[in-house]
Length: 85
Image (cartoon, rainbow, N blue to C red; front, side, top):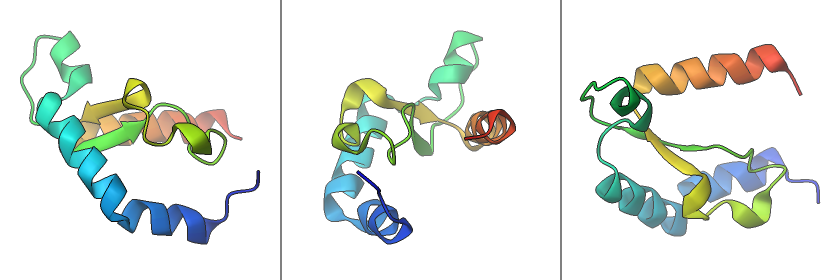
């Protein structure tokens, strides 16, 4: 299945994603990465640990969603870009 940029954009603007994102942040309001270092930082981003373009059917699966602060999310995204496609 080839997922287009338009499909990804539509997904992230959808009410279903907004509800899922809010639910995840309500369950895990603190950054899950910072918490591992005993730091308390508010999570503001819900990150898909599996790329949604490749695992489209799992895009709402809570097992693959992580609450992150902006700094940790930027680090994760930088690492993904370094690894390449």
